[in-house]
Image 1 (cartoon, rainbow, N blue to C red):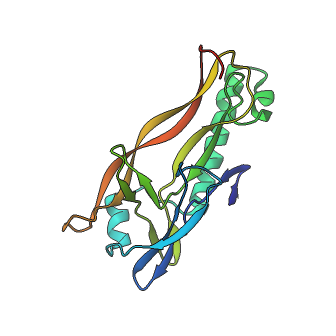
Image 2: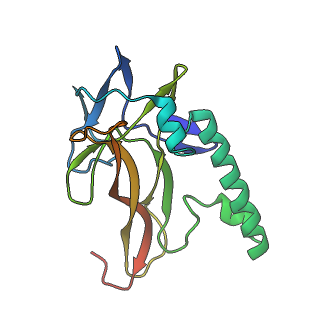
Image 3: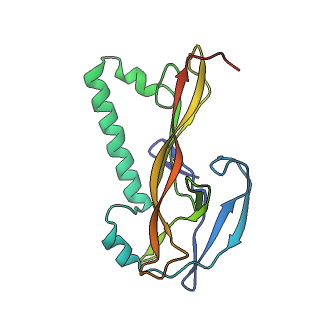
Amino acid sequence: MVSLNGKTALFLAVLFVVQGNFAHETLNCKDELDLWCKREPFKLELPDIDPDAIIKLFPGLFHTEAELMAIEKQEDSFREQHLSFETPDYKEILSLPGDGSMCCVTKQDLFSNATLKNTQGQLQYMVKLIVNGAEQLQYIPHGRCMEGGQCTGRCFQEYRTHPVLVYDLQSNQNPPVKFEYFNIPSYCSCKNVSPK
């Protein structure tokens, strides 16, 4: 777990370079995005790719940890500036847990998964790069429901469809990658239904 500017990004997978191949760690649990699920390592030989070619084809898609911290700082600054224009009580909102919602609180995190199931339920392997010994990853923002809030109905986890660059294990093209779509937890919303 790595703390980034007061927020926590949990890296669900560890990536090792082993003679040009990657060894992944995946999750073994009913919810593969569960923060506390058991991990079991497995190895899969993935196609070799040229990191420089991928970065040239998809600039801005991959980030180092340092770049991510800078992005987080910019987002926090923008949020504070935006709230200061909206209300004089913005500092109180910023001190609240999660996103500060009074109804259903959303906790924002950034993840870099090794694997995810796409919208068709097929397991896909996310592209990760090693450039000059530094890991460069695709980070996916997640918004999860937290305890608390004053929703008079029920809080529901909402999802959004998000594209991610994955290995294309069936392709002969170079580089052997493609975009797939994934349903990612995005935010928590209050619905006017009876509580459980």
